[in-house]
Length: 214
Image (cartoon, rainbow, N blue to C red; front, side, top):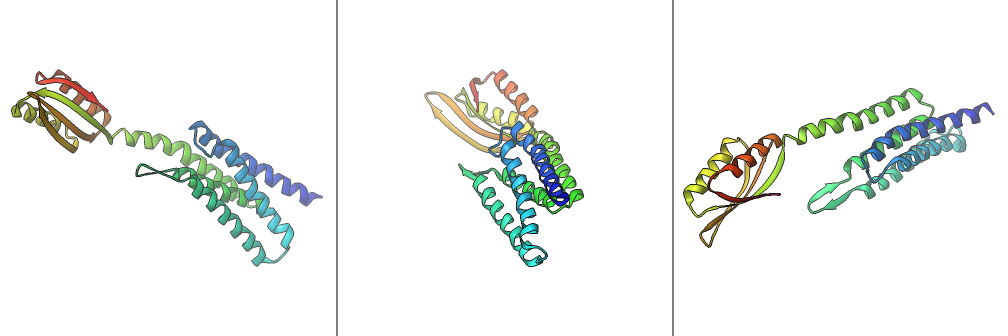
């Protein structure tokens, strides 16, 4: 009977761990949220416990069941990854599912220290590095400008000089001349603050008729 309560404690700890990890996912409105992470952690712990109770002292059978859990979680993670317009989405969600299952297996095996450490590290990475990613992304914003200005190559040259003076990376520079008006379509990458300053300078430029930023 004492052994049964020990297993129940392991399951409860796995649910708590899944709740901590899932809270961050739910907070950021991710596909695999609170309930999903709780169930993954709980399920991994339960399968690990069953591998202990069902096969007894057979080490090879225990490992076989644990390997099955890892394979099943891999399928779940693969389902969370989506290819969209040349970009890959859901990699963090898939990695979280993978880490979540490992925490559940740790608690299921009675490795409490590893379970607590895994929970703390996973939650720390999700919460702490999300802030770091936001700070980093502010330094590599890409904006596209559509600028209409005087039909003068000198005006276009001055616009280019203004852009280059901001020390941003120019990704595209297209010029069309229709009905005595030049249209510039440019793509630039740089810190968000610097791009805001560039936008303000372009608006104030006497040669610019209109500006659209996307």
